[in-house]
Image 1 (cartoon, rainbow, N blue to C red):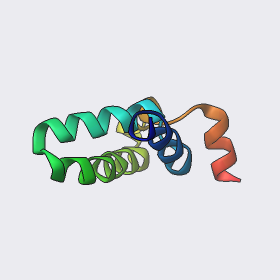
Image 2 (cartoon, rainbow, N blue to C red):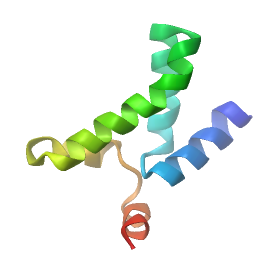
Image 3 (cartoon, helix red, strand yellow):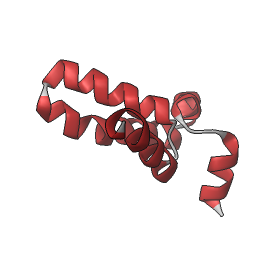
Image 4 (cartoon, rainbow, N blue to C red):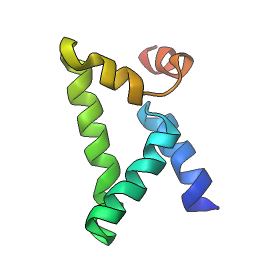
Length: 77
């Protein structure tokens, strides 16, 4: 329950990325790198979203991986 529901919701809300992206990042990087990937997967995705958000040609990726629009508006306030 904690790893599948609560952690992605809290992480996604705090980091302004979609909870489903957090969950998929944990699963993907765990599959690729095992236990180390479990801990480093979400920071890698955060770095990718941040990098894409600063470059106009790849901003659509940041928008795609980001959370709902109302969460972004609250985060900017």
